[in-house]
Length: 509
Ligand code: UN1
Image 1: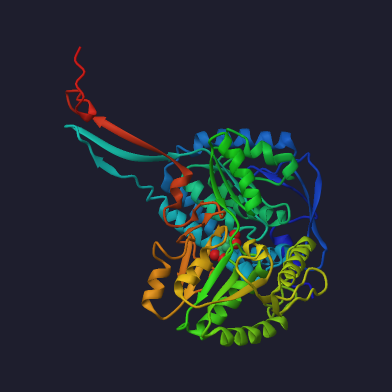
Image 2: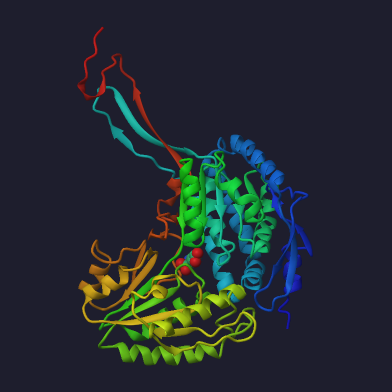
């Protein structure tokens, strides 16, 4: 069964060979290498992409600089109106784009649709935000003076996105940046270039209809060896938003930091759920299973560790075993509605899976369920009993391997919880108000996201998304994340007839 893939590709404007660079409505004649996009489902080539070379990148950058001069002057609500239309174009293309995400990245179709929904949601959010780029006004200490904050457009925003959310991460960044008056250069993961091309095809008509200058929305498919350092070292790009592994993020942050540029880093997680004695297991088990096997364990927010109170440990383990057995029967083609778990992204990920399990065994852990590589890139979601301090448990393995462990007191649970290098998402299942409040208090979870009675993954776009420690500290998406995409200016205005100095300083001459 081909699930209508060819028709979907056609409707999304994906050809057998595609140009990989766009400045909005213009597709370049690219001069870089030709690469293939391979589906993780069966290893087949979906289509080819002509990559950018260094000269193509330079041309895009210059076009973006010119576009910024025009775009920054357009009133923010007018920019918001264009983002509103982009949101509608995404609504129309939701089924097709969701399917392409599934085909090229391997997540199940439902999750592909969910990812496109996040794009639509952030468009709606950004439209509202375009009328709310608020600064404060302050009362001056001097008579007949006033003070205020203003937020101005920043310039070119570089977006480096990862394979696991091939479209939503761009939208979180690009739609906010666009209403803020910035222009965007998107470098997608080379594992999923077609999703990026499809996004640009979808927005093209809106850009044309509204005469949006060429260079506001840019896409550059390029090998890291060609574009990587040029991009992150480029002083003309004041902000780089990077999603990926901690290793990639550190490299980007160092290079951008060396020129005192700004970064938004959204890196690895090692997300845990604390299962307290009063946890409602009927609610918790589906949350754990979605968090640990959803997207085949390839979300930044995937549940990696379960910290279970000793009084319910055996019960949770038995229920989990039952759930994992059911899931094993639903591994398969992610385009098939009955499938719950698709493939991991590539053979490298299969090796990470094997390595994680081997390390657990070596350290003396017990594999409770799983430990099976199926054909191609398909693996059976696995869970094992471990100790938190083992190196393999401290590392983020971007595969469906869940670690479980026991605790006695809440203090101990919170200590175990925080005792990893990463700090993205976290949650506690409890009916005890003291435990819940302690977990989200200053002495509780040290993560950017801390939930009560829901799992670690599947955050809504309305909150600020990101985390602490090796997760990188960046915040994307909702709340006041928009501020990072703008430059802040404090104005003091004297409307009087004297020039009093601040701090009461007298300077007579
Ligand atoms: C990611 O894995 O990079 O919270 C993003 C979630 C999604 C986003 C994940 N809304 O799981």
